[in-house]
Structures are given as C-alpha cells and as structure tokens.
Length: 177
Length: 75
Image (cartoon, each protein chain N blue to C red):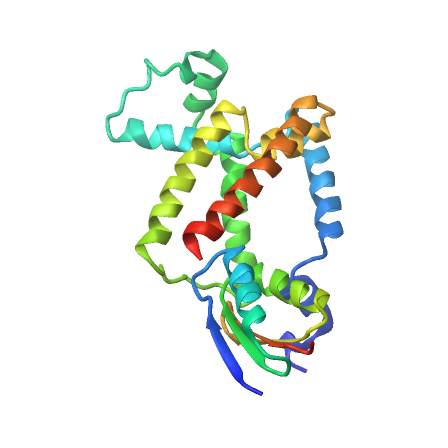
C-alpha cells in the first residue's frame, strides 16, 4: 500500500487536525513554555525586534524611539538571535510549518493575483503590526496568553477582535469581491 | 445540468468561501460548481459550509497544495 493511502499517515500528516486536538496541544505547549521560560507565548513583539534589527543593519537609529526607551524591550532587542527564546520560537513556527507542508506534499508558492492583493497585504500587514504594539500583543500574546493567564485584557481584546473581523469582512466584500 | 468552474487559485481565506457562496446562489438545482483552491483552509471551510447547506461535496487533490472542490446544488 502506498504511504499516502495509509489512514494514519492521512490523519496525522495529510489532513487538518480537528480543532479540539489543536486547542489541547496549544494549551499543553503554552503551559510547558510557561514552566520552562517563565513567560507566556507571544509572537509579534519578536517580529518587531526582527524588523528593528534589520533597520539597524541598514544604518537605522533606534535610540529616539519611545518603544525602546523601556529597558526591558531594549534588552530583548540586544539579545543575540540564537539566545533569544522568542526568536527561536518564531523560527520554529516557520520551519515547522514548512516541514509540515512538505510532508503533506502541499507546499506551493502561490501566484500573486492582482495589484490590489499586494496593496491589501502591505496595508493589512502595517495595520496589524501597528495594532499589536498599541494593544500590547497580537492574537497570541494578547488574546491566547491573556485569556490563559486569567487577565481581563485578553477578553476585552477578544471582543474587539470580533468587532474588527466583522468590519473587515464587510470591507472585504465591498472592495475585494 | 451544467458544470461551472470557479478559479480561486491564489486567493486567501475567506475570499474563496465568499466567492463560492455568491456563485452557488446563481446556480440551478442539479448544477455542479468546481472550485479551484490552493489555500488549505479553504479546502476545509468551503466543504464545511456546503455540507451544512445540504449539498453533495467531493474534494480532489489536483497537485501539490491544489484542490478541486466539487459541489452539487441539490436543492
């Protein structure tokens, strides 16, 4: 029998896992992470540090940035890439997703369909990036980890992300369909 | 019975689902819509929606990371 017809291979590698399996795994991994590193999972703060490092590499100056006037944030920025937990985790997500899509033979570089799609991606990315900094996190750091640590801000974030998604879907139907 | 094709290649969620919903509304009972997608979550949410509507759904993997979703308008 060919490997791709094996039912276990299909269920584990090929097909999407049920939502409940994902939820339980995420919860267990977040608990383990908290035990090992002492902080909950987050993604977007590290992405900002990657961007800031890139900006520094091309000669950009950060000392006047309000965001980096916080010593803890500056320390995170100055930690070398391979000693920084957040950077390693983000790298792990990218490498892991890549390997998973290869294992399922689902890796594909998608064609760009229109200029509109490019503009939407850039504007959307900038808005999301800015949003994560004023909300002190993304749907991982602010929502997922916020709710898991019984913090009210996680729930408030959750309510407003629904409002945002509702407005976003209306705009999507109006301008992109 | 007519077969229509809907090209959603290169479109990210939820665009394939929204386009499918719009197109299905135009079809006659008995017609088939083939939705071409290359976004793995569209392969999940498009069939989910169609089955909930009571339509017959079949998925065919046409290439690496590409699928044809066959939806038959049954009512």
